[in-house]
Length: 442
Ligand SMILES: Nc1nc2c(ncn2[C@@H]2O[C@H](COP(=O)(O)OP(=O)(O)OP(=O)(O)O)[C@@H](O)[C@H]2O)c(=O)[nH]1
Ligand SMILES: [Mg+2]
Image 1 (cartoon, rainbow, N blue to C red):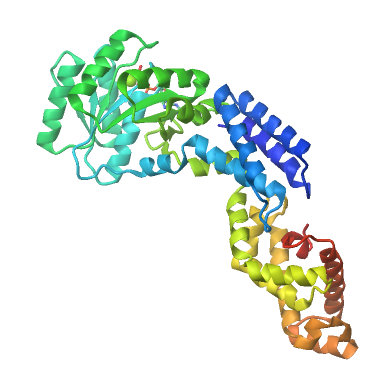
Image 2: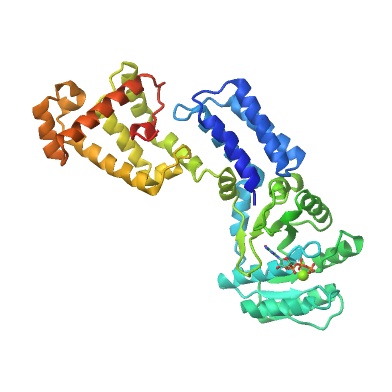
């Protein structure tokens, strides 16, 4: 899912990342590329346009935070917009809703072969796992094997299936609900018949069932592989039977993802679950934030960006920036920056989050050992030595080496690196701290 889109967006955003500054033309062309990437992923035209227009507006209004580069700002905004298009906070909330403690009929509707029956089983298994007592009901009386299919699934996952005597879906639903109340079953999952296309007969039947059972949920099960068509189907079903949520099945297939990115905005109904395979446990609640992260393929770079913003306390950054301006970045500042960095979490985790660094575990481990060594060296210095490394003669270097468990060569090497760092700092703008470069990994 989303592979092509994900690749394209990462390339576009990656292009931004290598630049220290971005001019208006570069941003414009980047936005245009984002729009094309969305359209090629089969995202609805209006949705793609809206996405880029909002991004542009927000970029114009954004004062680039002192802790973020322009590229990081763009990544942050693209991520936020992506979360919004996928359904924002609301969808995540709904996905986590539990129906324990109240009688909860739920309908599953959708076209033929979209995955309704499979999904009914998956939901039943989830509810069972939450300690509830779900009941599966096959309201599909057209296809001879449909009732049989439901009982097989029910048996497989160890939940009850209702088999009644009524000959119409409405009658059968009535029977099933009476029975479910009496026996203490809930939720009651009503699996309905599919059609090749939307037709009035089907819609009338579903409307009648809906009116009778007053379901707490009406889920449309839509095949993610059908792309834009899923959007049209969702709109039609929503007009007729008022959906409460969409379950995108076959999310495990390699589709372009347009349906997932368009449905919320064009139909106004959130995606609640995604089916990720044929097996009964292959379903997951749909969390927009997580999917946005996966699409942008940046691990948790956005989280990292937020952490950077939070943890560089304004006054520290200010003080360091001030000294930078005077070209006096000292070893004390260096320690300070390292402590700030470590507040954000273990270095190994941080480096993995930084998309710019293609580091393997070995290199990361090396970086961590280096960090420990460097801290020991600086800790073995006197305050005077930290402020003014110029006083470090051979005798002092020997003492520091002994004190920190290093050789004099190690101390010399670190002091050379530190000089480089000081030089680099001179060129830096206020408040931007190149963590990677500080550890020799930039
Ligand atoms: N890979 C994959 N296959 C799925 C998923 N959900 C359903 N399927 C498959 O899709 C096919 C149709 O699934 P059903 O659950 O029978 O579909 P339905 O909507 O009940 O079909 P009708 O009752 O005929 O309208 C089956 O082969 C399922 O195994 C999914 O999330 N991933
Ligand atoms: Mg079915």
